[in-house]
Image (tube, rainbow, N blue to C red; front, side, top):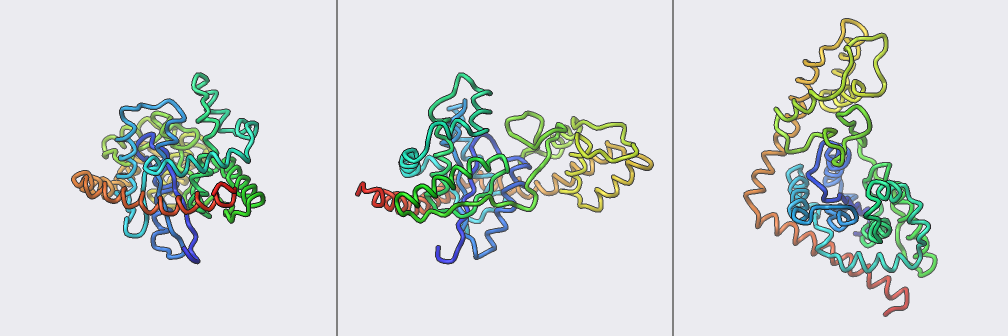
Length: 330
């Protein structure tokens, strides 16, 4: 890894990827494959999926779906590695335990994500949920990643990772980097519901990478709008979100055109949504075609996952051994 920055991209296996994942993270990450200054690791965080209620019968297939989405979106296994977190669970969970010796319970419980999940699932406040930030820190630091593409909502967890790195470096002489949030060009993709961003946990808010044209049209038809005309273009809500999507898929000039219509003759939202649906599907169609090809080659996909895990394990094992030596265990 000499002279290269290592980037770790991790996503929970809670469902197939949607436009928010694709534009907000995956597409930007794929661009790094062409930049020889970076080494990129893609991790499907299936262990993290166990921290909240989940369907055990579909967990394995869901994790594979995420791998297929990565590959069909353009991930090149010759230039990047993709693997399942659970395929080398021993090393990250062991390192997370060592990290727990320099972390306090109060710090974990103070994190916004812990409070949010505890409120959503009060009957499921487990130690796995409490320790989630430490496993995330382990996932990152075990590969000595310098950059992590996550949303701004994950910044508190990244700060915990940096705190752990500093403590391990100061106390035991490790050389862990203090990873920074890697921002892709798009970053934020608005929800179809008019508030917030696209999210797998909010039904109706997102468009999946596998949605066909008719499904996309139906979802956009449900997006909230107004009369289509006014003195000022809305800066928030359903109309603002639609215009942002127009910019993402049809270009800034098309958005400006619709904004001019809004303050003059008015927007016909049926036309806007049809144009937007077709533009989105144009982006997704080659991804869906590639996915069908990959689904017909299960052994090829298995080999990619196995090779990715092998590479990740080599890095992880070396880091854990170094930590154990510095802590005086071996």
